[in-house]
Amino acid sequence: MFEHETIRFDKGTKRITHDQFNELSHYYGEKGLPYFNLCYNGIVFNEHVGVIQVGKTVIEVLPKADKVLDTPEEESKWRNVLIDMLRSVGSFDIKAPSSSSLKIKPNTILDLYFELFIKEVEYLLHNGLIKRYHKKEGNVTSLKGRILFAQHLQQNLIHQERFYVSHSTYDVEHQLHFILFKTIRLVKQLSTNGALQSRIGNLLLNFPEMPDIKVSESVFEKLELNRKTTSYKKSIEIARLILLQYHPDLSTGRNNVLALMFDMNKLWEQFVVVSLRKNKDSDITISAQTSKYFWKPTKGNPSAIRPDIVINKGKDDCIVLDTKWKNLNGNNPSPDDLRQIYVYHEYYNAKKVALVYPGSEFGELKGTFYSTSSNILTNKECSIIKLAIPSIARDHKSIVKTWQEDIKLKFDDWMNGRSLEVV
Image (cartoon, rainbow, N blue to C red; front, side):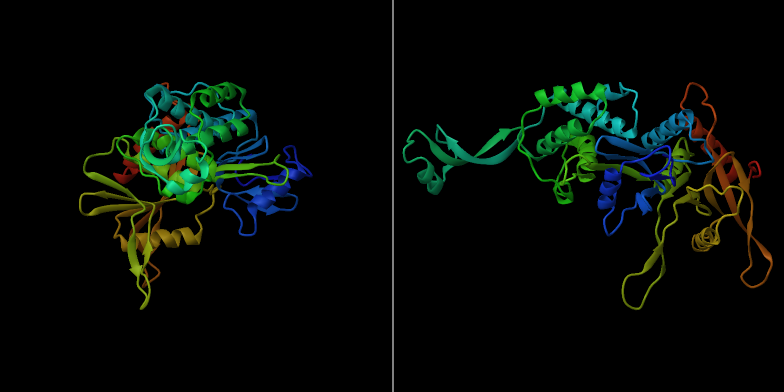
C-alpha cells in the first residue's frame, strides 16, 4: 500500500480478511491510533509509513511524494527510498563492524529490522555476553552468603546437606539479556522470511535460557547503559520497538498485531536536516526544532514556537525552513502553512524563510509578504521549495544519496541568492 490509501475486506485488488479487520479495529480501540483511521469495512492509512503485521499477513505502507503508479517497480523504488531515508537519519545505525551490509534482500522493512536485530545479537554473542552481579536466593550445597532461616527450616528439615541462602552471583542472567531473549523468541514467532528462520534458531540454541519477563515502557526507562554495555544500545532499541508495538490476539492467537510505523512528516524533516548538514561550511550552524517563547499567560506556562530548521550564518543571516511532507500538485500552500512561516519570519528576524516540500522536480516559487499597515508588498521574502527525488542514481550511489547531494547543492544556490528553476 501507499500512504493515504484504503484497504478493505469486501472489495479491492488488495484485501484483508474480516478477522484481520476486526483485529485491527480492536487494536485501534476507543482512543484511536496515529497510524490509520477506520472506514466502512476497512482502514485508511495516513502519513505514517512502515509495516503492520496481522497474524502472518504483512501490510507495508510506502511513502508517496508524487502521483505514482501501483506497480511492482514503483513499490520496489519507494521501499528502497524509505529504507535509505531511515538509514540516513540513523534509524538503521549498525554498531557491529561485521554488519556493514545485510545479507538478505528484504521483502519488507519488517524483515530489515528483524535481520538488523539478529545481526546485533549475533555480534554480542561473538564478543561474549557481559556479566553482572545480582542477588540470588535458593538452595545450595555449600554455604555462601547469608542463610534465610525461615525458608531454610521450611525446605531443608530432612535435607541437612542443603542451605537456603541469599548471595551475590556474577553471571549473564540480568535484565538486558531477559529483554533480548524475549525478543528473539518473539521474532521467531513473527518472522515469515525463511532466510531468517535458521539464524533465529541458531540464536536460540546459543543464547542462554532466560526467565520470561513482562515488558512495559517503564522497564526500558529504568535501563542504564554504561561504557561496558554501550554495544547493547542498538539491539535494545530494536527490542523496545518490537516488544512495545506487539499486541497479541488473546482470543484466538492467530491475528497478533505488530506495527512499526514512522511519521513521514518527522522523517522528512530529519532527512532534510541531515542532508543540509552534510559538508556544510564551518561558519554555518543548522539547528532542528529550536524553541522560542512568544506568549505568556498570567498563570501557567508560556507557549513556544518551534520551526523545523533554523540556519544561521554569522550573527545576522538567519534562514528558517519549515518542512511539509505533502504534494502541492501545482497549488499554492495552505493559508495556515503561510501564516506559520510568517510568524517564524517575524520572531526570528529571518533574512529568508521557505516552505519545503517533496515534488516531481526541483524548483522554487518566490513570494513576498504584504505590509501589515498597507496593501503594499514588502521585501520580506518567502519561497516555496520543491525537492525532487532523482529518477536515476549517479556515481554508483543510491538514489537517496544522490538526492541528498542535490538537496545540498540546491540549497547552497538558494541561500546565496542564485535562483532555482521556477515551478
